[in-house]
Length: 424
Image 1 (cartoon, rainbow, N blue to C red):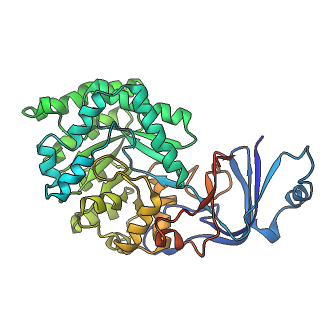
Image 2 (tube, rainbow, N blue to C red):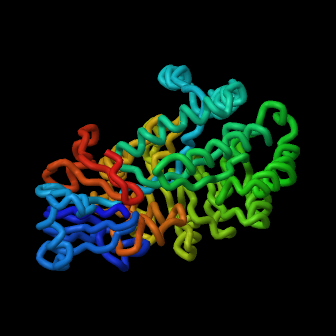
Image 3 (cartoon, rainbow, N blue to C red):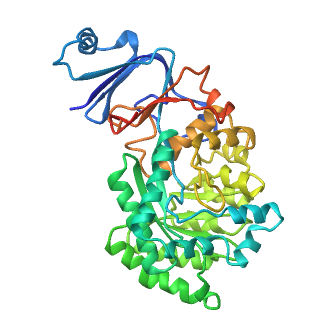
């Protein structure tokens, strides 16, 4: 049995047994215990609190630290903080090759839509993926998984969507399954066959929608390769009607909805997502009063991806209006080769504070407990609570938690523990 006791924690962040989804003014509340201990046993958070309240059996264990029969690992975190690991609820972590030429094209003035029309964008990634073996795809994806793990992420949602054929979508989803089985990260899988229309269906979009509904979804469900289904609902991609039909088909196979919505304009994606009780609607750079009204009367979480907004040089989602409208807000990286080649949650925190005017407390809530809700893992992750999985990190000696988004390229993590085991 693995046991870890962390003592003299300067600040234990997001700690409490009744921390739930935060919205509105609640997002400014970051539950903190000063001068704290944290006890981990058999992969779970067993106890925590102020040092002065530490139970006698743990105090006794400290005095026996030299006893070879004492299997307790003791970490003195004096001057440092402990956080729950980040929950990154929107990524495209599995892909083949990079797309820096399109980065140069953007610099030279081409829009995202113009690049896509020339066979770039998602179609470029689909071609690269088709020519890449499953083993090579897994190897490169595991490199990225280890990269995000090292920067504080403990749970990640990964989408398919660069396959665009039944065979290649399943190949992606099988890679995601292998990551789930072999990485200490908690992984959720999303089927995103409706990411773009493949070239062979350029004149027959209805045919591709039918293939998703009648061929891909049953195959994905038969192999139990995904928990969620997603659709890129945007002008020039999948319409509201397409999205409705695909989400409805997914629901019949037990796949809960997510939606890429309103990245490039008001698309109706928010409303169709709410109709299907989507766990989240993501992007949301373009929103109006109808979107706010739909979300206020739902359980759907608004997930913002500021790294993609930054990379594409777009207008940021009006995060403050979501907070003012009492709508729960999450932050995620959208790690992908085309619009956000970065899996750093630290960078998302910085952009949320600098460009979207969230406070550090709001941003931290958005990528811990609210991020967990946006992945459906809130019972196990997202806060430091008794009985939850011990996914945490210990910082270096930093001045305050606000230092993390403030010094957004400075390494700040000293120790990572996932599933109750020391990673480094």
